[in-house]
Image 1 (tube, rainbow, N blue to C red):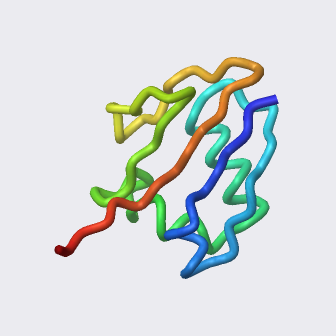
Image 2 (image 1 turned 120 degrees about the vertical axis):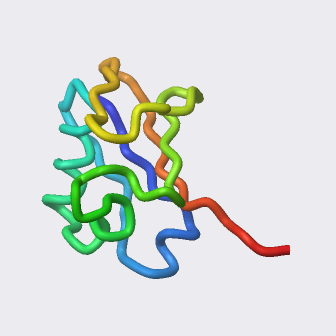
Length: 89
């Protein structure tokens, strides 16, 4: 079953436990995670439902480049990592 993992940076601001889902696409998996944890949505997606510029998603170690439709397929054992980019020096 695919698992969505939220990094500790995100967890500083909002409860964001890992979520297991039967989803077959990134969009559906994120929707499942947001159904369990609605406050996370605003940190990950903008008002149009696109990934925020400061958020990066990796599926099985590969960066998701498509940020609008989020239609990347998930395998039954995929691990999805949702990260907020850090800035500063």
